[in-house]
Amino acid sequence: MDDQYGPVVASYTRAEFIQDGVLIEIPPKVASDAGFEVPLLITAGAQGEFVAGTDGGEDERLRTVLSAVARAVARGPANEVCFVVPAEDLPTTQASTGVDRLLAITEPGDTGEPVMTLMLPHEM
Image 1 (cartoon, helix red, strand yellow):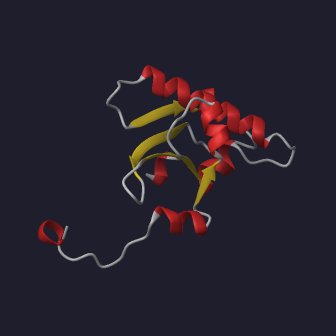
Image 2 (spheres, rainbow, N blue to C red):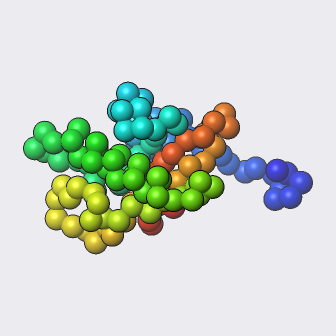
């Protein structure tokens, strides 16, 4: 990387994002039950927008989000790495903040393994 872009001046790993609470790991069993074979993460912003709540329904909303993402992935081309999930397919947990979609992006993790991250459009 030094050759093309110059020396690395700072780096922040996915593990550090998780430790800092910016990214939240979706339990492997929950991801697997939804049909995902890769590790899944959700940003704190997307979790707050589509999953969080005080009514005890977080698990059901997470399953709804993962189901919507799975449908978007199934409809998309096999070589896509970014999927857009319309908000109408997602649960609403509080007054809308105007978010109209969720992005699901597959990228290499800290050790090169594929990892899917669910995020709000402005978090990309």
